[in-house]
Image 1 (cartoon, helix red, strand yellow):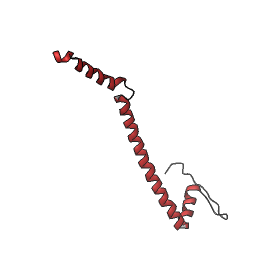
Image 2 (cartoon, one colour):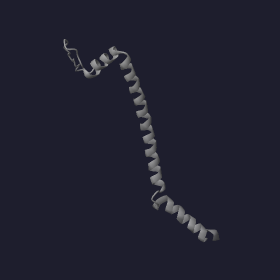
Image 3 (spheres, one colour):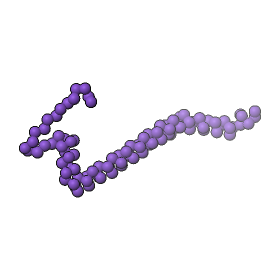
Image 4 (cartoon, helix red, strand yellow):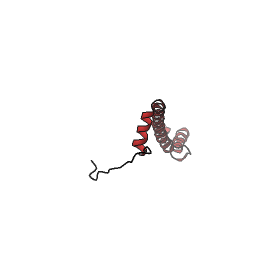
Length: 94
């Protein structure tokens, strides 16, 4: 029981409490920053995969003009000068 009121024990307990709750870089702030860092790493991984996919698509478009035309027609509804494009919307959603 005497060790509980020792000045070193009191100092250590005070120091731990200070680090956990009152310091600028307290435990809870560090935990939130680590969560944010994990989220940013996941976003980085997602964007790196998206960049790789887009690079592959660009190479495919450079090598095959038919794929470029198909992409432009499907994605942006582009047409040739002598064509008409009709968009049919199915009201049932099927």
